[in-house]
Image (cartoon, rainbow, N blue to C red; front, side, top):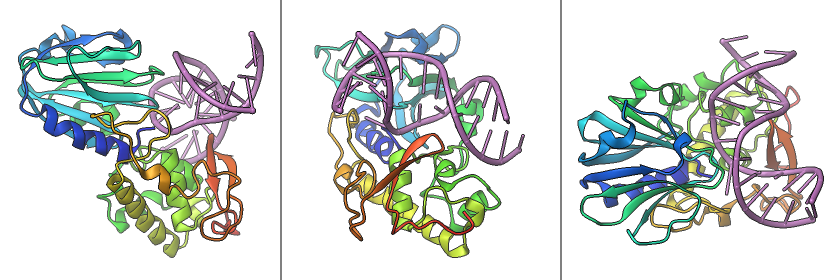
Length: 277
DNA sequence: GCCACTGTTAGCAT
DNA sequence: CATGCTAACAGTGG
């Protein structure tokens, strides 16, 4: 489930624990995880120091000395975890990074094996399409930029919010919560938006993502931060996974439909369809 | 046991 | 080009 707020929380919990530490070696336990790397693979990391950890969309970038970057995508069930050397690994552990100080190692765990890792030499934004194709960050984009990203788009807003090339970092949970907060029905075509709709959607996007980061993300099943801690935003979900329960605003039962191939929860009264849809 | 469903997105069809 | 559906995988719940 890692979407922007979860990935941001992982980055914040991970950075102070690995920054400045020197990598001893990386053990790749599931080969297909590593989608791309310099010749010789992850051996190139040995002896390099971690300079920092950052996020772009839903991707986590660990910057190392020598211009080396580890780029992770957690997809549905990926986790980055710090673990003591001796602590048992389960069968879902796909990568272990050991540090020369003998302290906690970094593990990548992924039940469904959808996640991937790139080892990139040089600026990853320039060197890999996985990053360069991403749209703007929802917490950085201006209202004007947001309007530009959506104008003349005929697709349904739910699909556009999930499209990482339009805007980066939003997934199914936050798309539904953002649409509820802005009072917009998920099937609404972006081209049918009024100026006011766009403004409300921009505001709600910032508000919901900021609140979710503050609550350290949503834990439905697998998500935990690098220290293994669950998030708390699931207790604030107003429509996601609340089908049939009363809307917190008006009491109407929350409805669920399929939009852009994804389940979409919404309040049929608070999120009325536009005539133009 | 079988079937439907799950937080993502690449790749393909329209 | 824009848009929409499906498969990739493993696990869970009905």
